Image: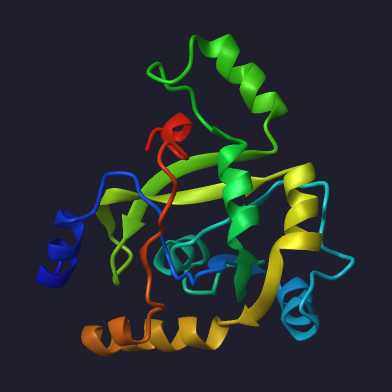
Length: 206
């Protein structure tokens, strides 16, 4: 880990939401095949081929998305979308989410957790954040899964804009390969701690 990455890690809670956000919106990332991602970015909405009946995962961390999609090189993940969504919808999903795994400090027992998981329209998992070389950092990043009502609201109500950021991914990756780490960091989205109301994430272990 670089000295810069270490300094940042020291000041960050073990589980927190860091994202590019405005007063009204928050940006999350998804990766799709060009058949889905290209028309979505062009038209500002997901095409008919996008499956509404499947859980869709969104990630506020650009670098975690890069880790997941291999800098937009993995099959079916060659197009990276920056999806700007309404903060009210994002927080609705968090409020109605369930952890994707059992936590003895948060759930009465396994059966209580399973009941919650079955009924919740969203789920959350906390995965290690990544540095510019995609190595794990000592704090975790939010991954938000949307299903059922949450998927419908996401596609039809929350999206403000869809932007293809695949070229940015490729350029940052090229700079990292060349050892130009500061230049690479300079191209990253400006992600900062996302402000949440007291208690909003308590049921999610944060």
